[in-house]
Image 1 (cartoon, helix red, strand yellow):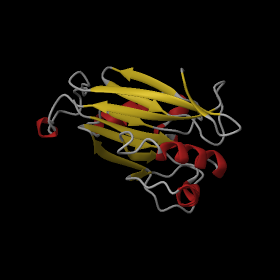
Image 2 (cartoon, rainbow, N blue to C red):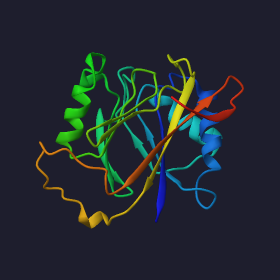
Image 3 (tube, rainbow, N blue to C red):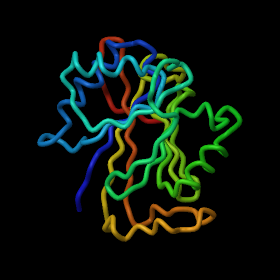
Image 4 (spheres, helix red, strand yellow):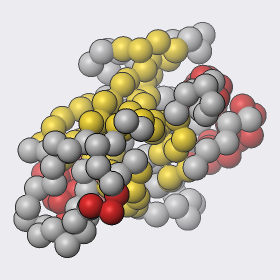
Length: 201
C-alpha cells in the first residue's frame, strides 16, 4: 500500500530559528529517504516561510493560509486540497469561532466534503476524530502554549482506494468516512537547541 506524508505546522510568529530546525529536519524525510511530499502552513508567520525555506534549502509542494496576525499577506483565509486520496480543509481557525469549541471547524469540514480539518490559532496540539472527520492542530512552532512546548505534525496517509472512487456529490449532511483509508498523525517537539523528537499528546 502506498504511503505519503504531509508536514503540518503553524504559528511561527517570527521564530525563524525554530522554523529552520523543522525544515532542516524535514529535508531528511523527503523522497527518496522518506515520503514527506507536501507541506501545510496554517497561518501566523506568513513572512517567515520564504526566509526559513531559503535558509534551510527546503523545497516542497506548499499549501498556505494566513492567520489573524498576517495583516499584509495575500494568502487565503482557508483552502481545500486533495492529498493521498484524502480531502483536507485547512484554516487558521480564528474565523471558525474556535475559542467557542470545534463546531465551526466541523461545519466547515462537512461543507467542503473533507476527511481532515487542519487548523492552528490555539498554539496547542490537538487531535480528535469527530464521527469520521479528523480535526488536527499541530500546535505552535514559535509561541507554544502547551506543556509539551513547540510542536509540529506529520500526517501519514496510507491509501486503500482509488481517488476516482471519491463521491464528491455526497450530501453535505452525511459525515465523511475515513474507514477505507488509514491516517496517522504524529506529533514532534522542538527543544531550545533545535533538537526534534516524537512526542505524545
